[in-house]
Image (cartoon, rainbow, N blue to C red; front, side, top):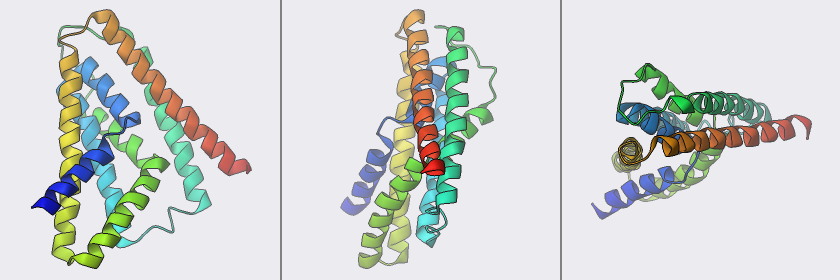
Length: 208
């Protein structure tokens, strides 16, 4: 049980660093409420699960090719810039009273999914962190335990997702309209900032 809990904590620590997905969750939670924020995180967790599976079955060399890395940097650049610009354009539409968002729930899910699946830093993160954890676990435990402890990491990711969605959607009840707009603008700017960084990395890969 102690080992299982430690892997849940590992999942929490993997999800906690502030990045594009957390910024998008904060924005969706403030602008549209819990479900939209939660589904951004669920989309990201699904993408994380795909990378965990890729690492598990050993399809790593394909992702390490220069072509794939450049493609993923460019894809991440377009996804983040688009989402950041959309966030800033919609910042003025934030209201204190809770109103059902016109944005469909599936759009929030795919926003989180594409942000995470197109993020080369996520790929490197999972290859490095989960790859090493997998190697250590495989050397010590058999396949059933390997699946169990991988599930514990997944549980940690989901706990962080629910926590972020709850906190972000609760903020709207305690903040002024102007501050809500400011936070939304900041979230959008941070997404664009991450997107520009991805674009620079793609440019360097293409012309280095």
